[in-house]
Image 1: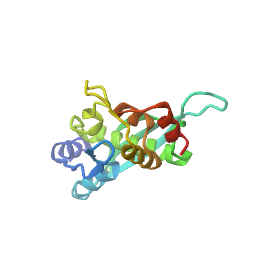
Image 2 (image 1 turned 45 degrees about the vertical axis):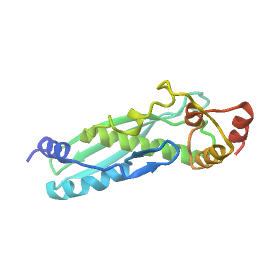
Image 3 (image 1 turned 90 degrees about the horizontal axis):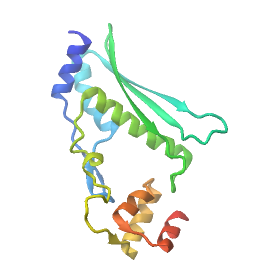
Image 4 (image 1 turned 60 degrees about the vertical axis):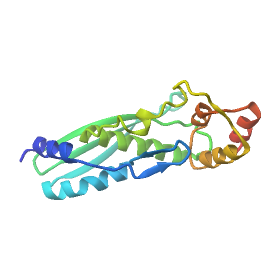
Length: 181
C-alpha cells in the first residue's frame, strides 16, 4: 500500500470527537492531542507514523514583527511521506499569559490545524468556524459582576480580552480591571 493510499484510508475513516468544552465560549472542540489519539489505531494498522515539526519563521532582533510558527505534520512509512502545514502567529501581547504560554498556545493551535490539513478534518462544525465572535447581529450583554469574575478566570487561563469584548459590553473601568490581572 502506498503512502497516499494509507493517507486516503485515514482521511476517509478518521473520527475524532470534540470532547473538550470551552465554558466561556460555550462550545466543544478537539485538540491536537485528541486528533493524535484518534490516529493511533490507523498508524499501527498501516505501519506508519506521524511526525510534527515546528519552525520559527520571524524573530528578527529589534524588529516589531510578531513571531510566526510554521507547523508541519507528516505521515510517514518506510518508503515515503506526505505532509501538510499551518502558519500561526504568536500573540506576544496576550494579557494574562506568560511568554512560554503564548508560544505554547500558538504551538498547540498550529499542531491542531496542520493535523487537520493533513487528515482533511472538516472544521465547519468546529468552534472557530461556527463561533460568530459577536458578529452575528445579536445584542451583547453587559458584563455583570458574575460574568466579570468568569472573565477574570478565563483570562487567567490564557483567554483573550478580545473574545470577552466580542461577547460583552465592557466598560473602561471593567477593561482596566481585566488588564491589571
